[in-house]
Length: 83
Image (cartoon, rainbow, N blue to C red; front, side, top):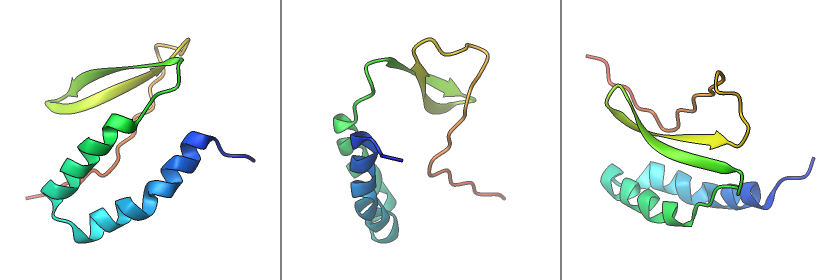
């Protein structure tokens, strides 16, 4: 199975992401992630929209011609603190 150039680029960035998670203060890591998001591009047949899920800022990525009744939630880097 061959991987796309997009996935190859994402894999190349993993060591940097792991370093940020392990050694940088969280506000600094978030700031760097926001800077890097400028360079993320969706495929031409994808759209996105900002939404709120129970007060949490999210982004919905929608492939062209996708069924409206199907959703795949993806939670990356979720941290939960229980009292």
